[in-house]
Image (cartoon, rainbow, N blue to C red):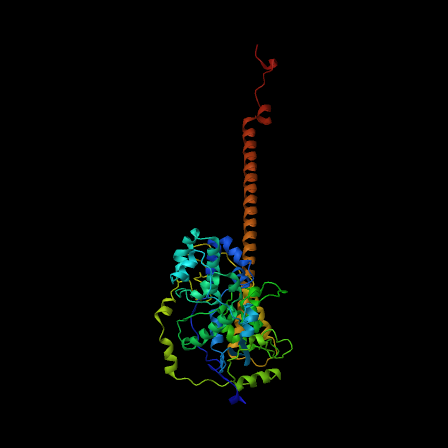
Length: 504
């Protein structure tokens, strides 16, 4: 049976780890546009075309390079052109156009749209099209954002649409020039709305995932294009435990595209991922398919079927096993056999990609536990020295501790030594924090008691001193009075002054 199923890209526990991913999906750009062009930005936000995409930045969801990278290493290799399969806790999970649409809500219906004809309004974008001009996100930030003040209102609105498309939906490197096709579409917003952005952005993301395979072992990290936030949110939805670790849902009764309902710091370490997979219980929730996981049935709408999709009987077998509720816990996936020369090909990067890895180019980068963008140690990102609104995820640490404590209490079986150490360390750290707080409270109370006793002793000593002084003064005053007054015996013994005793 194992030989009839796809192989994993890396074996369990052998997934390489990298320090960072330079994510070209730029949510910071949206913040900059909102600050510089607030009226036009609000106008675009009213349009349901991309409003649910733009709200990701407003909700403050951060990017987790470790989570994304770890899943890229868990890919199940198939011959499918328009879907990817991954495994977690040995269970296969599908990432197809169906899941992508459920997350992003972007249009995936292909229809004929004539973009050859467009109306020349003598504005900025008309001139760009007529002169075959070149413009990219970097030029917009450095030059055209300020110059746009002299543009027409509609041209500024068009620029925001194009920035959302290039910087987020397509997630292109900031040095890549805008296709003239996009400019022509922006000249007619109705055509722009009808264009299947979901279809093309999904295809581009899959190409980026394929391209990243040769970079996964580069320890310092790599550049990756595409709408990676959509991929991350799919992971958080397909495995709700990662949703608890990386963030929280904004509303429990949310009914729109999934990408508009997440917030959080997305602090997820490699050890968190390993521990979660190790402790994942048999009754743990995993959604192999999006939107159609409630009853376990595999349903694929015609809107997501591609005519040129390749057939792969291994995938068909997986689908059948999922429908039959196969127990994957004891399944051992095979591993793709690779040679060192295949991995060495990943070192051959284009100059454009190498340049794109600079931290100042606006790419979303994760160092350590930082979020998207150039971040400080406390997770507060900054954009060109400007103050950024902070989205503090105060419950992140407590959610993670509660999740792992609950998982540790599940009857999954024996826990390995590393996990035992992790749980022991978790308990010990909690007790240590409690002990420190208790010790500090006792110390503070003892200090206050000592201060009160010292003050009272000082007051008592002062009163005693005053009493002694008063007694001493009283005693001295008594002695002085005795010396000043004659005694009775001396008065009685004095010479008589009577006349009878006087000589004549």
